[in-house]
Amino acid sequence: MEVPRSHISLFLCMLSCVSLIGSRYTADWASLDSRPLPEWYDDAKFGIFVHWGVFSVPAFGSEWFWWNWQGAQISEYVQYMAKNYPPGFTYADFAPDFRAQFFDPYEWADIFEASGAKYVVLTSKHHEGFTNWGSPNSWNWNSVDNGPRRDLVADLGVAIRKKSLHYGLYNSLFEWFNPLYLSDKQADFKTQEFVNNKLMPELYNLVKRYEPELIWSDGDWEANDTYWNSTEFLAWLYNDSPVKEVVVVNDRWGAGCSCKHGGYYNCADKFTPGTLPSHKWEKCTSVDTYSWGYRRNMELSQLMDLPFIIKDLVHTVAFGGNYLLNVGPKPDGMIPPVFEERLRDIGAWMKINGEAIYATKPWRVQTENATVPVWYTSKGSTVYAIFTTNPMQYTFQLFAPKTSDKTVVTLLGISEPLKWDPLHSTGLIVLITDLPYSPAQVWTLKLDGVA
Image 1 (cartoon, rainbow, N blue to C red):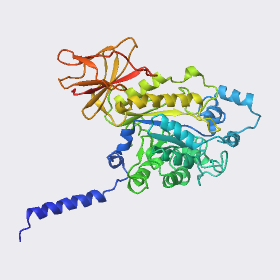
Image 2 (cartoon, rainbow, N blue to C red; image 1 turned 90 degrees about the vertical axis):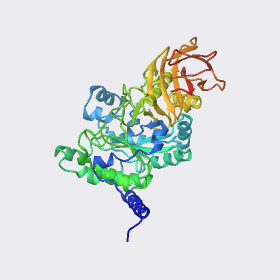
Image 3 (tube, helix red, strand yellow; image 1 turned 60 degrees about the horizontal axis):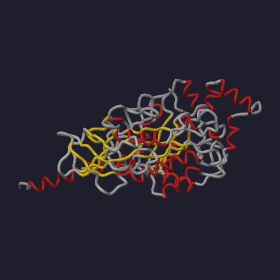
Image 4 (cartoon, rainbow, N blue to C red; image 1 turned 120 degrees about the horizontal axis):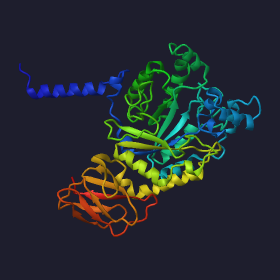
């Protein structure tokens, strides 16, 4: 008997669905890199990075203090210790002073929400190996058994999620002075004692316990991904972990992986491409241009000011990236007021201009030097032209947009449409009678009905 074609089509459709549902990612980059990036990450655009740990106690130079002092033995750090601490003082002796006695996770969450950020990434463990949670694989070198005597990762996670922000965790793969890691390194990474007995048990436990929606991996460059067992971990993360549907990861999973493999690309700290990348990327940068962790000797001139941060954010988003801005809290758990001021001022700008940032896509033209520098973003049929200008300059020529008789131009923050004239066969001239106050001197034109 001949089977009706409609039955055959239905069978093939069911077979396809079963195959799709049953598909699993395998532990190789070809498979792992095929996983679609969860939409929440590209829509978010702006996140806060938090570097906080024992390195916040000496608060000198950078978060690489321990390595600079006893690894590289940089004279500036050696002299700092000789001048300020007694003979025999070890790095571990800093840990009891990492007390976090004034740490209020809900206050942090308020500040981060006010900044306009949509996700927060906290250091669960930096290269020093100290974990900001009660890791069963880090006895007495963690925030529950030492220092704060509390689970910092858990406490902040609860507060962040109450604000409906996405919660991510930074994790360093390597640890400068861990004996197991040094033994593997001595063996040219042909052994995996550190990976099997410290790193991976800890990382699996971290994911199961706190369910981070983003894992920001780092400290990978001394060994390849095979040593780190990175592909095996990511296959589990994408297939069987409690966050398999939503988790996002970066590209730091082994020497040579950066800008080649992973969920999105960091490529390098403060990476800033000059053209539109073909893959989703993120720029991580710090308000303190000298350090990611808190420094008691930081100077105002060494911090990014608000106009620079906003321009950097806009440039990043126009080129399809996310912007992850770092602050370094003090060891007592307080966020320095100068950092809080920056974050709240970003939020004030975002309240007016966020429409041109969140959930946008790169336009066909990312930037042009018209009358003033302009960056473009888009959302559906709307194009946003984000510009800086002298307050006395109120007439702008934009060459990239193609106008029609249906074109409407408005300035975000002002409801009334602006007057405009076509510029020959392409572009437009916009007349603005007054510019509203902007703390960053950055404004946004909303262009509807342009191509």
